[in-house]
Image 1 (cartoon, rainbow, N blue to C red):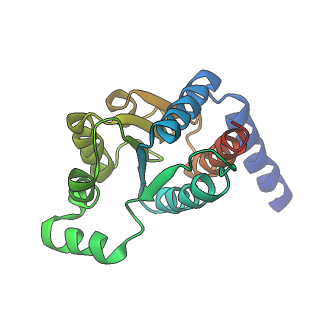
Image 2 (tube, rainbow, N blue to C red):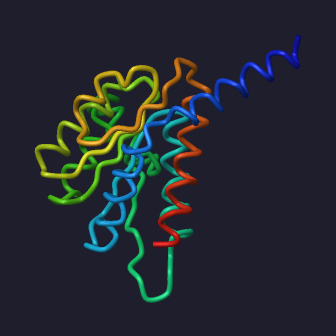
Length: 185
């Protein structure tokens, strides 16, 4: 039974990767490369497993895409400063933990990269709405049917799966694909 569960899970992840919208992924790569060349900052954020993906992206995009003589990607995960995060959660509500950090930091043309497996995380959606008002470029990574996030962002990569674990795994694959390509641009 366990080996069948393993095969079922691997099959779902493989199917999800094979059916990823490649054009949307290429748009995200172009957005990130443009931000790098123009000196814009990428703000990435998510909850739970998506927060871990955001933190991982900061490491990969910031460090592993560096090239001699070329600009480095400026990237910040809004979920990484627990003191600030928890202060906003405690004093103003969990739904405001990203938006209140984003408002004083972000500038027009910066990138908001929102990660939400369901696409329906209220704090992620609120931050994307603020990002749009600021004039930021908005990008989403999600799963299932894209949730509300797909309609709020300019570019959205929707992992075609209803399994949250597979969605989160494919988000990490997306991180590594983007890192690999940006490291060669």
